Image (cartoon, rainbow, N blue to C red; front, side, top):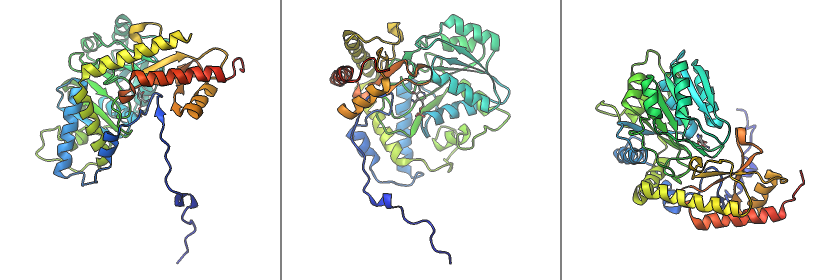
Length: 391
Ligand code: PMP
C-alpha cells in the first residue's frame, strides 16, 4: 500500500487563534454573546421536529422583520449572494427581460447573475451617491418591459438608502416583479414588504441582525410564486430551487418535508436568536435608534471638517455611512492605522466608490452613540498621525 504523501499539516498543531475586534465596517458586524452562545448549542438532526420548530420561529421572525404575510418565507443556507441567486435563478427564465438599477455594485452583480442564465439585461444607472426618481424608473419599465426589476434598498458600496415608495406599484402596472436587496438596510431603516408591493426581498444575517454570516432570509409574494411555480424550465440550480426550499421550510401544502440539503442547524439557532433580539426591541425602535445614531455620527464627522458622500440627507443609509476620503491622505493608511492602533475595522470604498470614500458601518448592537464616539476618536487620531500630502 502506498504511504501517505501529504503529512498532517504543522499549522494545524497550533491552537486556533481569533482576535476580538470592533467591526465597524460594512459587515460583518459584531455578534453579541447571546447570539454566539445560541450557535454553540448541540447539533441535532436537521430533520428533527425541534429543528422544524426553530425553522418555523425563524419564518415568523422574518415575516415580522420584512413586514409580510407571505407564506413562502425562509432562510437560504448561504450568504447574501446565495439569496440574490435564489431570487434571480428562480424568477428569471432564459430570454426574459430584466432591468437592474445600478447605484453601486449590487445592481451590477444582479445584472451579471441574470446574464449568466440567459436573460436580456438592461441597466438604469444613477451616479454614485445618488438615487433614481420614480419617473426615471417608469421610463425604463415602459421601454424594456422587464419580467423583473432589481433595486438595492441599502447600497452599501455608496451609502445610499434608495426610496421605495411607489416603485412596487409601478412594477405591477407594467406586469413586472419587484426584487429588493435589503442586506445592508433591513432592521435599520423602514421597509414594508407587503405595503410597498415588493415581490422578492432578501437580506443577510451578518449586518443589523448581528448573527454570524451564513444564512440569508428571503420571502416571495404570491405573484412571484405564481411566476416561479408556473415556469416551463427548471431553475438552473438544484440547491436554490424554490420548490425544494419551500418544502424543506414547510411553506408548501405537502404533508411532510423531504430531505433537500443538510440545513446548517447551528447557524439557524443564531439566526433565530438574532430575530428574537430584533422582535424584543421592536422594529420601529430599531429604525429610530439607527437613524438617531447615524445623525449623531454625521454631525460629528462634519464637525471634524469631513464631508459626507451622499449629499441628500434623506438618502443617507443609517447603517453604512460613506465619508468622502479626506484629501491628501491615503485611505488605506487611515484604515490600517485605525485597525492597528484602535482595533477597529472601517473600510475603503467598493466598486464605483473605491478611492473616493471611507465606509463605516454601525449596525445592530454597534449602533450606539458610544460606538460613534469611538470611531470619531479613532478617525481624529488617524488624521493627526497619517501623513498628509503623502500621495
Ligand atoms: N447586498 C448588499 C447591499 C450587501 O451589502 C452585501 C454584503 N456586503 C451583499 C448584497 C452580499 O452579501 P454577502 O457578502 O453576505 O454574500
